[in-house]
Length: 49
Image (cartoon, rainbow, N blue to C red; front, side, top):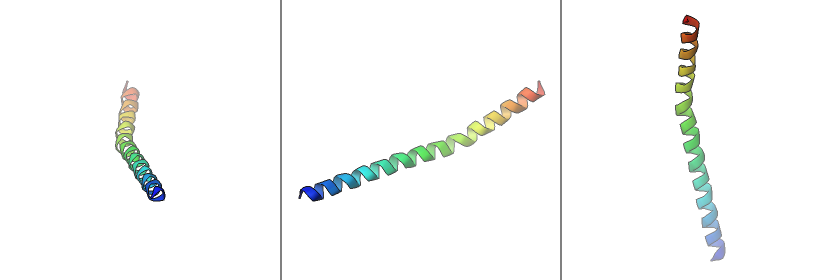
């Protein structure tokens, strides 16, 4: 019985960590392109000055 509970707990922890990692990766994927385009725009603006 205790072994089953420990296995369930380990599975839940693994699931939660994978979900958190997935969210972090997804957020960086979404955020990075916009930051890169902003940097490029800033560079173009500076060069036009």
